[in-house]
Each structure stands twice: as C-alpha cells, then as structure tokens.
Image (cartoon, rainbow, N blue to C red; front, side, top):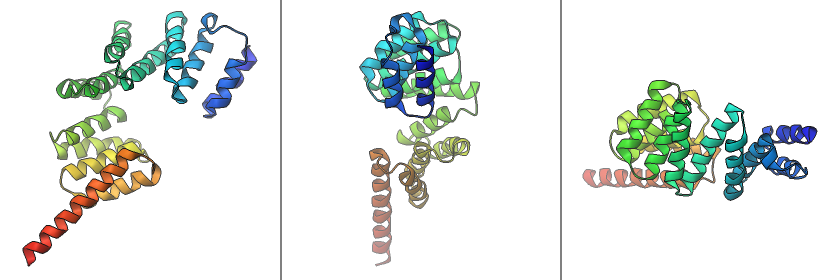
Length: 234
C-alpha cells in the first residue's frame, strides 16, 4: 500500500492525475481507514473536475486525518467546490471551521472574499479581501481579486489597475492576472493598454472564453472610439 501511495503522490505532483488516480484506486485499502489515501483521492478527483467524488474523499480526510496541513487544504478545496457548485452556506461553513481551528490566514480571507462575491455581496467581498491583503500584502490572489472586483463593478478602475499590477509583478505569466489588469484598463477607458495585456493572456490561455470576451469588448470599444474621432474630424 505504501509503495502504491508513494507512486501515486509522485504522479500527482507531476500532474499526471489520471495515472495517479489509477494507482490510488488499484489498492484494496479502504480510504475510510486511510486519511492520506482519502486526501489524495480527493485531490485527484478535484483536478479531474469530478467534484462529487472529490467531496466524498475530502470530507473523509477532514474527519479522520490528524495531519493539519491536509485538513487545511481539504477544507479550502471543499470551500472552493461548494462555491463553484453554488452551495455557498457549505462553502462558508468550511472556512468558518478553519477560523475556529486557528487557521487564520490571507488564503482563508481571500476564499471568504470569493464566496461573498459569488453571491454578489460586493462590499462584504472587498472587506474580506482587504483583511487578506492586510495579513499578507504579497498575496497575489487577494490582490488580483481586489483589482478585478474594483474594475468589474466600476468602483475604482484606476485603483484596480494598481492592485492588478501588484499581483502581476508577483506572477507575471499568470493569464488570469493578465486578464484582470487588461480588463481594469478597459474599464478605465485605456483600450490600447487593455489589448496589450489581454493579447498576452490569450497567448497563454487561448481557450479561455472570459478572456476572449474581454478582448472582443476592448477591440469593439477601440473601434467605436476611432469612429467617433473620425466623425468629429468630418
């Protein structure tokens, strides 16, 4: 069992999730009796977007493991899965359990911000993200989320650019961060700058529909601006 689990962990860490899952499910060990097995099953199913299976094993890991890191990671992933499947009360419960257990961190507050914004609770979301940034000014996820929301909601596009730029400095090749700063420039009416960042985001993650939609909007806005300028000249 141990050699099989070690092999699965190596496969997981090299992002060979299907192979890792096959290795994990080939054992006759019961995940209910092995928190570490349940944990890695939950991770693999999450990566493969088989969320119902992931929930089953991550919940097992939470209730049976004595590994604090695995408990923390499991609850964070559970919160994410519950959020993207619109089960917000359950998502919030997992994060509240982390705080109650002493796991106060920028990551937890950033996750709270994500849950709140998913429910269109904009002010609450920004408050949680500010807590995250106060705890860790280098938390790129919180910085990017703060910037994106400020831009998307039209609250402070120029401030949004600043937050997004700080996130991008930490992870320059992250396509989602490139998209966020491009969108912030779009919301600020700076369409040329918007295109520059969105084009790079598309080069890295060309299949992303949100990024493609943002680029389409930037191109349309620039064309509209150009047409209006020509009409004024005439």
